[in-house]
Image 1 (cartoon, rainbow, N blue to C red):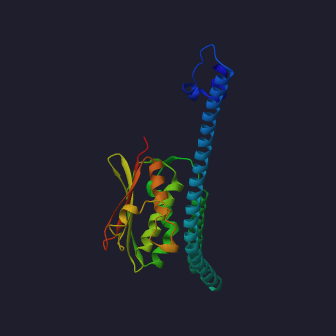
Image 2 (cartoon, rainbow, N blue to C red):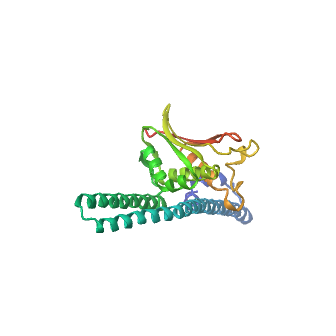
Image 3 (spheres, rainbow, N blue to C red):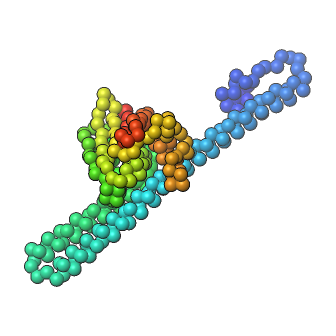
Length: 279
């Protein structure tokens, strides 16, 4: 029995029974076949679970890269505006004789360069990401994400309503929360093609950190609402993968929380993610 436990592991001890003497060679072979079959089934199950986990991680990375791609396309336009501002102010500074006015132009150039640096840092931080969880400032995570989608507000003629308040730190992965926020914000922009208001906020509620994204868009029909978190469900046709909300829900649940939605046609949508605070 010690040899068996060493070979198959202690979890299989209940699947092995004893043979009473006298026993035949056929009985020993049959028992060995049963044990080998059980071990093979366990190995195949573990391999299947490993493959499923790897596939899920690949889907999360693919959806993350899709969000990065959409954000990066807009950031390219914003960088063009930043560079135009830098070049324009540099030209004025070179032509200006007054030192005070030169300093003013230089200040604008530095502000524009700082803005570009912040965008790059936030994009790099989000794209790299880690599986590490640590105490984080939820308000800062929201602010970093807003930097990445700042250009979208002008593009869709959407007004930002910032409702962030001080929240006790939560044990979380900042990159994963940014992914959820990006998914929710991008969906909100798509729901308001003619413009509107996008409210983003966070608050403490009875020991739970809550962040929300609320839009004044078209809303979600009642018959669609129960399906939006289903895997690969989308109403965007070729423009959507149907993975964004499903993955966002998985991220919320992996943090011990949940993602909720309230919506009605013509009244917009509100998504709330609740995460237990760090102890």
